[in-house]
Image 1 (cartoon, rainbow, N blue to C red):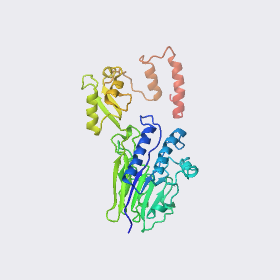
Image 2: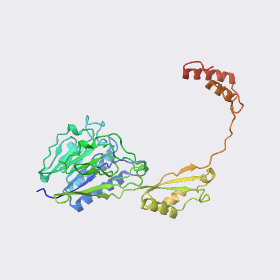
Image 3: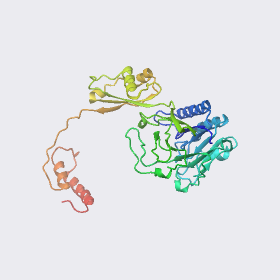
Image 4: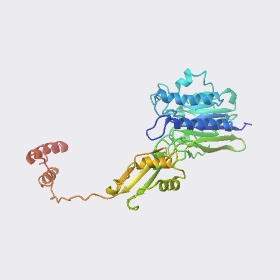
Length: 386
């Protein structure tokens, strides 16, 4: 009988300094909390689902931050099976290697508990004799895999790819119509199948096994507003099978407020009004989060925004950042409508407009301009437009 196991999985951390308000320290802090969680729950092992960095060739200063986290987790005794994602390949394919090569080759003696999974193969370690991790890194097909599946062990499949039918955007709820066929992973021999690459946590409707996408632990941009981010805690036992929960990561969140100045007689919202709107929409506070403001109104109202408005708001709300407000004019400036006679050709249309007296030619001769225009129009349609 297979013993009960406990494990945690995090994926798609994408270490980088973003221009959206998210910092590399935010990513580091999330992963440090993941390490603390693994130690508190005394997991048997952890899984990283791919895409450690945002850049295929991360800068040294970003790499150092990320590797310190891996070193601490290793030294604390946590075994990590680390899958290679599409952002980890140097050349976007498996041809030239990956950004975890230093951890795998140079620092192998310092990171003995880190198992880099860069082949479509089965991975195991001696002190976890009852567990087999069947890896499908990015750019590999399931048909290429040389998995060693044995029902005497717990068989966990981890992959990094897009499956057809997956929701990939929280705002538009866009569903992938193409991608890997889920049937290639839907095997009863797998006790669970867990994926990276897709940032939205979601269940995958398998017929023969169980699993889903863990999702990214951070919100990278305003496109992620309203999405839950975290890591997975899971248990496998003969009594209950696969049981899991999503653990919130505590990352900074993107929130927004839309405000119609015409309804408020041109008055911009105060900190209390914005905080209330964010609480109602997202169930979180502005404090520590990244705020977008969208103001609608007439041009006169939009131009009436007080000086230092956003800096005062940021201080009052305790927001991590308030992006420059988006201003949307709701009134259209009146335009003079020029009556034009109906003509038969593009050339005639242009000539009628230029000779109408409604356009300033800057002192240029209309006949010479029309001669040039006739050449251009003739080239576009392949013949003289006269």
